[in-house]
Image (cartoon, rainbow, N blue to C red):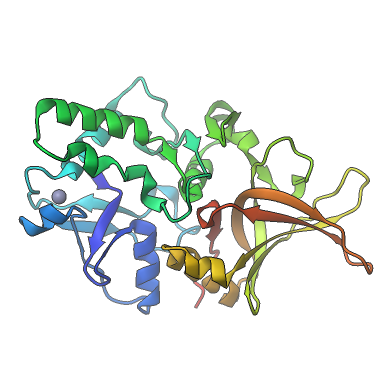
Length: 313
Ligand SMILES: [Zn+2]
């Protein structure tokens, strides 16, 4: 009974659940948000309610089984609403015993392809074609085509946050047994995620680096500085960081999501937050006695995840 997006009445836009969290925080962290079906025609024909579950919870603190999500209400949807078929397909997948199961995750939530090369603004790229597949008459073949489309698309994402959610839900054994296709390479989750300490500019392929980091606001952007100091082959320590400019944040359509997380992290009394970054690893020699720098340049803002260790207030 889940749906990846919903129309939010308060901001007059279709949003994902993570957006709902930040919209709520931005509105002072009080009151409720109201959601409806994300499909335009469905809203014109009955305007069914959608419920936002746990969007007020702080990510990174609450247990994974209480993760935020949207779910259908009992309100009937318009006959041609693609999200009803989406829901049926998801239920079929979740009930399919032949598909792998990860502790704490539904089968439909298990991501097996992370494609960070997709344009950062196309955060809803996962579902861009969905409504198009259904356009026209609602014949049986169309329904089948739609179910096929959903089944193929569900394990794919350009949004690192979904991959991180899987990573955090897995046991050590599951991390070793579950594969993730990362920028065209087939890896285990365990090798796709590398602790910041082991970041090196000489890896054959880029990985998702993670660890505790300090987030600070500067004149032109935010710096995420990892606590762990990676060492080069000759033993010299480096500082590992990522820099995100305000310009990049403002240029992205869904900038609010990451921008508010970064602001909350920078303002927070807590100094360290769990951060995940995927991008190009660059080495920079620093003169004057300061440690050398390794910088991860994320290709897209959807390749950066900041999980707050406490409410930024
Ligand atoms: Zn609908």
